[in-house]
Image (cartoon, rainbow, N blue to C red; front, side, top):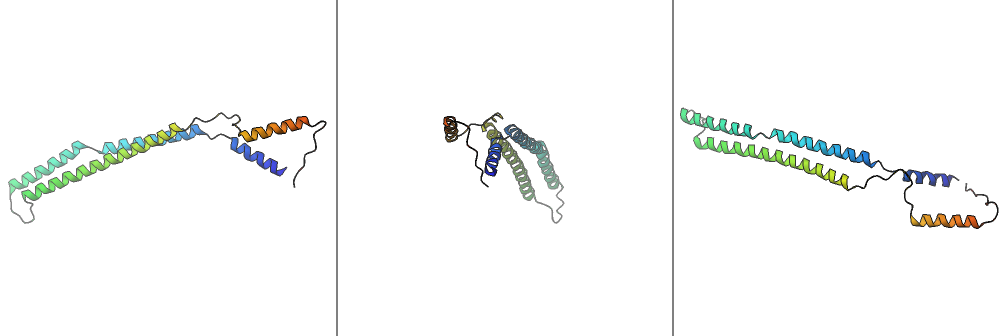
Length: 159
């Protein structure tokens, strides 16, 4: 009897459908958070601020060139131009890095949405389909019980 109750409990637990709707909604919220973070990163990309920073550096070089005080430690025009190129490269690298991060976040969000849409919709909470062998076994038991005349034999219990 204990075996039968344990088997029936296991079967009942397997019949409970997985809540696919909640899982899909959680995946959509996760994808939305990736999209939100991508937008925040893109907001950090400001080409106008980069252009102004480059312009400020160029004006600084020009003013130093025009002043020509000749003090020790002053940059030459070539050094100032090289520093300006380096600044431009750093700003471009930062911009590319931020664009790559935003792209990766959007890609992850799209992958999550694709996985969620490929999942079949959850089944109804009715009885799940049974394997063919189990159905045939039950049919054979029903036929045997119907063919036995008189009262059913007492059930044996294993202890």
